[in-house]
Length: 231
Image: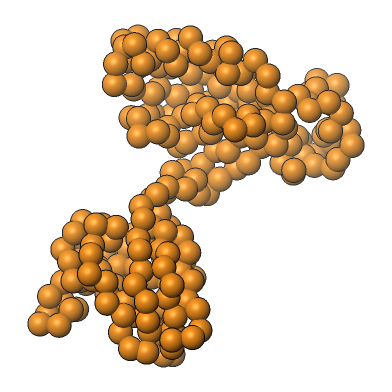
């Protein structure tokens, strides 16, 4: 699991994220439809009384492993200041999913734009990952390019389908080069790897209470977050 607490322009990783090895346990989520309660005083003054929405709280423990003891100490020592002012904070919890963002001036016929956008990881096929969003799919085929060569293929499925491919045995499509459009499709896609949180739970006007400790490079956090389900 990954949990990001965003305060203004600052993102605090309370579980997972930033390429660190992480383990989360004991996730518990509680909701209440009666949101106006004295026990919860939102960090944005009065918003819980002015807007509808259910109260939600989430708690969990996480262990994050840093590369050095100094990095672990810096993270723990910096948390109190980072969490001191949580006005307007938003927390997002979920599973980190690999994505491939496809950009470039692509068309299906020379004039009609084709916009793949960001495709999330959808599974493993023929030993390599594939990514899919709606009718767009990006995957690897062991024999597709001319001469029966392996290739990564970007396709807008339909009747007809529109295809771009790159002869390659790279482990992921962002490493493939030499993309070719199959007529009538045109353009050269650019593929960039990334991540997203999906599925996710977003908590607005979030208030996070965090207990932190570290042993060596490992940082243990006990986290409790409360807030609203609606913006």
